[in-house]
Length: 128
Image (cartoon, rainbow, N blue to C red; front, top):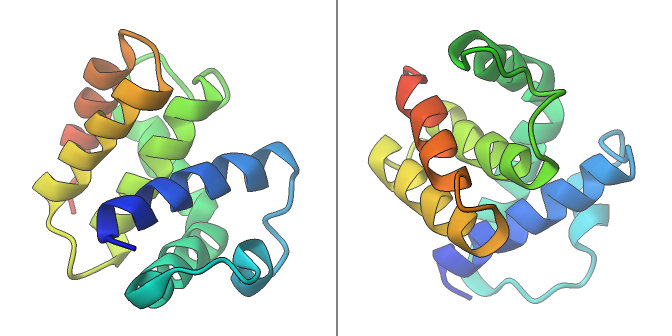
């Protein structure tokens, strides 16, 4: 599995965990026996940071998004933004530009026509 595929897996898993209010469970349980190849550490790291720092990440997102709180955002957009923000703030080997670009690409697959611009604008304001 490549990093791009691992990132998409993390976004989908973050969406699922959020929908099921399952953030209290251990990241290892969320991924189960999914074959992640050399990306297992990355996936566990991002999911772990999302679990530990979700309130902080959401606070940052809320502070930079004009008139949009995380509670009003489309769940798919929010999952993408949270993963990219976690990468930007806590994962040292992911450059900010890469996190933003990959988030915009994922929005083309899972979001609406406006998602890419919306996600890009929010992530561009996060100072990592």
